[in-house]
Structure formats: structure tokens, C-alpha cells
Length: 320
Image (tube, rainbow, N blue to C red):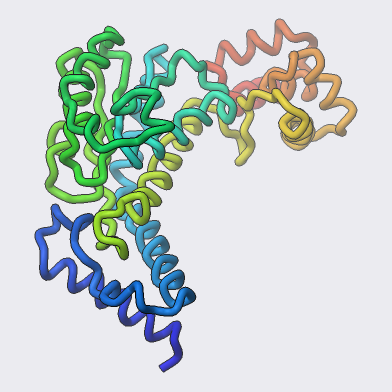
């Protein structure tokens, strides 16, 4: 049998064997059967096995689409109401949260003060990540209480095991404040999924390196968080025909991108798009309206305000 086919056979045997041998809630800790003798295999075979694990982890996100849709709607309501989106996580899950959160202002123009990241161990965890802080639920509770949350806010807790005290206690404290809560886990039936208003399970298979959730579980978390925040931005009207229309154009690449976006949506040339962006100080939505025929910046901004910042109905009114 060709090596690729043999590998697939052993990979999926490993998933099934791990599910049979251990309760589903411990799936992230079980040993993958195909990993026996892993350190004796040729590098190409090991890497192919790791790649197959990542691909299967990515597919696990599909089963969570319904819950991700609910989470995205809640997050959009939070941002639109002027509330804050707070990520709370530890270890590798914290890095996935940070990657998603830090990109939201630049990609979708979300105000920076509306995005908060709470990492177990604080900023020190970014240069010296240790395991102890993830068990400090009290620190998470204090961090949440210091933010003085209310019902406009939303806290997202992320943990592969589903049991990590830091994100679990962050959600408990958030619920006590009346905030919305969303919980991510890679194991079904776990504590964070019970605590959260919206529980999102990403049922990744056994890791090729047992317990190394920076691999498959982390991949699924990154995909799911990116999906949730992208859908949130779509709800908020920050995406139009696949374009980022609330992008902050603060470098050469993004200024060129903004020009192309304005030209494409308004149906005009680059020169007119560039002129409109100059008038709008780089803001894409009003620039589109200016390029499409609105008389001045004030009128463009007023039209957007009428439609809660959503470009499509503003354009429809203009063209009507």
C-alpha cells in the first residue's frame, strides 16, 4: 500500500482507538495509536502524520457552526451597544485569543478600547509562559471585577480541556455582573461549556503528541475564533461583498487596498477613489459614498449614521 494511504489508515485508526479507550471529555489527553514509535519513524512520515492531525482538527470546527453563529450575533450586539469584547484564556489558548483580538481594530475598525484580553499570568506570560497561572481562578475573578462589566459586555473564555480554572472563573464572574458569556472547549461535557451562556465545543481528535493542545486543539480554536469575529464584523456592516470596508488604512499596503475597495464598490476609477479617500481621511465607507455621488463628507457621514454605519442600505438609498 502506498505510504500516503497507509498513513491515512493509521491516522484514522488512531482517532477511533483513542475514542474507544478514553472518555470523550479527556480526548485532548489521550495517546494517538499511530504515535506509537513516533520518534523512530522517518521525518517525512512524522510530518505527514502531524499534517493529517491539523487537517482533521480543522474539520472539527464544522460541527460547531450553529453555536458559532449564536456567539457571533452576541458579540456583534455587544460591540454595537458600545460594550467590550473580553477574551480570557491561559497558555496556548491565550495565544489564540490574543491573535484574534489584536487584529480586530486594524482589520475591521473596532475601537481598541472595546477589545480586552485577559491572560493567565498577565503580560509576563507572553515571554515566560508557565503552567501555574492557569489554575489561579481567583486572579481571573479579580481581573473581571476590575473591569466593572455590565450587560453590554461579553466575555469569551477559551480552554482546550474545558476545565481550566482561569477562563472558567472569568466566565463565572462575568455572569455575576450580568454580562454575556461564550465558552470554547475541545472536550464535550466540560465545565466551561456548562457555565457559558453559549458553549462552543470543537471536538478535535486525539493529539499526535498527547496533550499538546498547541497542535490540533489550538488550530481549531484559531479557526473558530476567526470565524466568530469575522461573522461579528459582517453583522456590524464592516464587510461588503467580501471587502473590509471598515479597515484602518495606516500603511502603504492598506492604503492601496482601500483605494481598490472604493473603486470596486463605487464603480469608479482609481483617481476618483483616491480623491474620495483623501476627503474622508482614509475612511472607506464615506469614501465609497463620495465616489458614488454624495456631495460632501458631512452628507456621506449623515447617510451612514441613518443606516447605523451599514454601507449597503446607504448605497441603496443613494442610488434610489
